[in-house]
Amino acid sequence: MVFGQWAAPGVVIPGGEKVKNIDIRTLVLVCTITSLIVAIAFGAAAGSRRRLNVAMLCWGFGFLLRVLGFFFIFLRGRIPDFISTPLANTLIVAGTVALLWGINIYAGKPIQWWFGLAWVTASIVLLLLATYAQPNYNVRVLVVSLLLVGVDVGIARGLILTRETGVRPQQISLAILFLASGAAMAVRGFIAITAPAQSSVFESNAASLIAFIDGFILPICATLGLLSTVALKTQIEREKSISDLEVALRRVKALSGLLPICASCKKIRDENGNWNEVESYVSAHSEADFSHSICPDCFSKLYGFRFPDPPPR
Image (tube, rainbow, N blue to C red; front, side):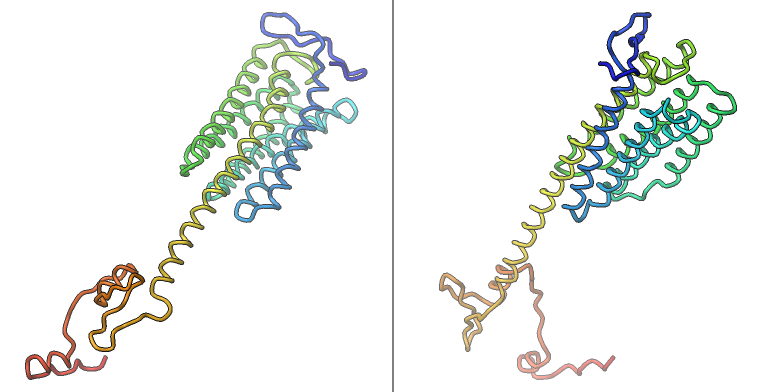
């Protein structure tokens, strides 16, 4: 693919060969558009949900930050590198941290604010050092890759530890997806520290290709997985709520209305026309049970004397 004057000559893969006609800047643009579509999808889904809307908004916000990060990378060469380099990478790291916070909200766990803030702060400090103090593109790639590995592992861990009936396969699949993304970033970091010095993200090599293919595949797969998991969980909870309401309604109906009771023996007639003892009828139509005793009046009639009433409390 070629994108105007920014076309790259080819991607260097391990071994020294080149993959022709791959334009890294075009891949960055594709990542930007993909993440934007995903962010809009989560925003629209959040408006149609009630319980999980905060988690979806967090996921949408995370992908929106990644949109801005990829867009600043796309504009590199049009805006000063000393602005776009630390800003773009920090936004991508912060966006992935927001995905982790959304997983915490989805799982009903406390948001790991300290983890996210520490990761973003480390990203800012290390990127500034690698951009201004000791400018080194390969070091910047290694820093960002390792930071993303840490967040991806955190997301996978949160999904694995969230044990919910009915959606467990979806959670495991998402965990594998983020572990695979973390593995890709680890490979990218290894390539960066073993490859010759590079001066630009648009120099075609395996490290850049891995980063932006992951930036294209991850949003699509993660969105499909997260939305399907939320939809299935919502359906399961709705079915359980309906079942609980039906059971409660049956219990309410069981002892409501007029009960035909014998004026003499106090038996109750059921829907089949049979006369039942009060204890039998109530036990059959509710969860109540009986323990028998004798009231003071009956005790007096049966045994000729009466226990004194208990003193008032």
